[in-house]
Length: 152
Image (tube, rainbow, N blue to C red; front, side):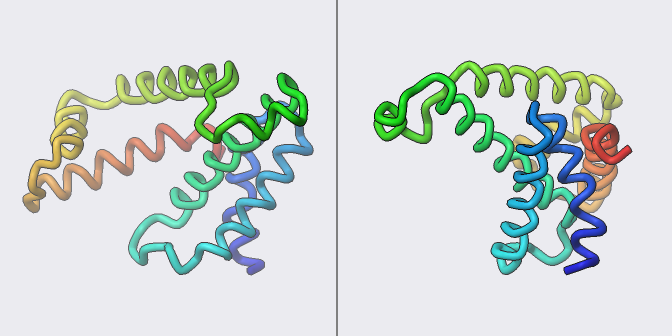
């Protein structure tokens, strides 16, 4: 458990700090993610990147916290019960737009062949040995570009 905390908590906390305006909320979310990691450890696929998995869970916890905060701010207690989980408020729209813009800027940093590989993988092209290797290099670069600022 100490090893997981040492390796995973700092980048998850940094991610939560970027997504959430309040330090206390970011701390709470980082703790929730660690608990969730242990609760869901049986779902982890060996051979996959554990940090990416943890950060993905962290993004969902951040979205949930922002949605929760938005509902508290804009609605009374009675109205909260009437809202479904799929209700999209201004925070969610803004977050989706920011995420889309960030991802598009990251994709623009890929080379033409890396973008072609990305497209092939999205289309579900059967993976030849060459495409599998190109996919691995492209995903490594994407991860570095997407997470580099969080991990630094």
